[in-house]
Each structure stands twice: as structure tokens, then as C-alpha cells.
Image (spheres, rainbow, N blue to C red):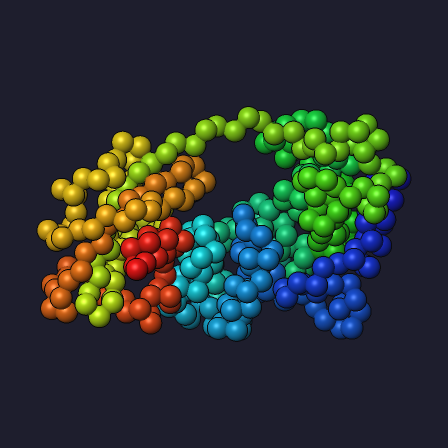
Length: 353
């Protein structure tokens, strides 16, 4: 049967070409007695959501050095987890990572469930992540579908259905293709194929193990797949950031609300963001000070909107009274604060000489 042949071809390719990643157990590693670590698989999959492998490596290594196993992470302080996550983006993932660790520790005796259905009940674990953990960490048959899988299979079978409707067809195909033996290897193989050979632009078809069976290549449409529905234009929101800088160089920070965008993260004082918010209304300043407007705007893009923020700075004396729940962060401490990227940009612009 062609489906089984496709699977065998790809597994043979993966055995020779699997990427060496810090959270991965390759076929050659397994032959030397190593087994997948569910904690590592889970953490890497959460980190890899909407983030590149290159960006995740150093965060994964930092987290596993600070919290070597699930019980360590479950007993950590949430603020420390958020600080360690700063710069990786999509901060709800960090909060859910912490919640999930505590849930597994308290309700599952520190062991991740093996079944997709039970994994789906854990904080921060969706359909893709549940399938990936089940297949990769526990060797259970599961259809693992991410962007790489969608691209590879849409090309292999010349599926012209546009995203997001394509996802259902790919899920069914992945279920048929995934073998009962080493399903985790197969999932990682097809993701590696998409990341290294069947790339979004200029796929290297000449070295692809599925070159001879790829319908997209035969029809000359491989590089145009997967088809995508037209994107909606993102709105532009605006706001203002106010950096209060003490005479010793410390910056005044506060914690964002526990719910909503960037929940629980640190920030300098800012105004709410909206499409009609001003960039230069000092009546919105938190204090009556001699504010200096910086020439550079903070520009940042979130999933659903673009943001522009003007940055104002003001210098104050050591005895400046601060509101409750605000704190001073010294120049030596600021890098360790749980500042999301957009707020770190504001601080850098405001503190620039």
C-alpha cells in the first residue's frame, strides 16, 4: 500500500537525517538506550508554538537548568518563570506552562497523562500539543499536525484546499500515514522534512525522500502550496509610555493586570492602547513632571494588531514618592525583569543617551 510505503521511506530518511535538538531523542539515541523525557517534550512543544527552533534552544536550556524536572518547575515562583520567559513572546504560554506543571504535579502525581484526550484537559495544551506529546513522549498513535506537516502533505498529495479548511484534510491524512510503530519518529520526521527540505520557499525537491511520489512536484505547483485564504488587514493601535528615571538610573515599573494581553508581565507606565489613542497628550501622563519626548516610536506587531507607542522620559530625585505596587529597577536589575519585548523596546528607547 502506498501510504505504508510513504511512511517507511520517511522513517528511513529520518533515521539518517534527524536534527540534533536538546529536547529530542533520535533513533540513534534510542538504540543507545535513551528514552524520550515527557517533561522535555512538553516544555519544548509549548515553547515552539509560533516560535522558531533557533530561538527556543537557549530558553529550553535555561529552563531545564533552572528547573531540571517537573516538580522543580511546579514549586517555582510564577514571577521567576515569567522573567525567564521574557523575550520569547506569547506570554500566556508561560503562565499556562506554570499552571500545567502545578496541575500535573498535584493531580497526576507528577506524571503526564499519555492519552490525547487527558492531555487536552491540561492548561495550555491544545490539539497539536496533545498529539505531539502522546506520540513523541509515549509512542502512542496520534496525528500530529503543525504548519510543517500542512505544507508537506498539501504538496505530497497536491491538495489545493486553502487554509484553514486544509487542516481537516491533513489531519485525516496524517492519521492514515502515521505508523503504529514509532509514531513519534514519524511526526518528527515530517516536521524535519518541512523545516529543512520542503521549505516554504525554494523547496529542495532533488533531495526529498518523497520526490518520486510528490504530486505537487509532478504538477509543478509544489511551491504554491499550501494555498492561503486572504489575510485580514491588522488595525493600528497607539499609546504612550512614560519612563520615570531616578537620579541613580533606576526605572519605575509596575505589574500589568493578571488577565488580558501580556497579563502579569512588568512594564513602565503606559496608557491604554486603541486605534484612536493620541501619541502626544501629556494630560494622560501619570505625574506632573518635565517630560521629554523621544524621537523614536516603539513599533511592535501582535497577532491581531500593530502597535505604535510614543516614549516620554522624566528624571526624578531619589525621594520621589511612588504609587503602591510600583517598584524601582536599577540598571543592573532591569535585564532580569519580566519585561515583554514591546516594553523592553520602550525602556531601551527611553534610557538611550
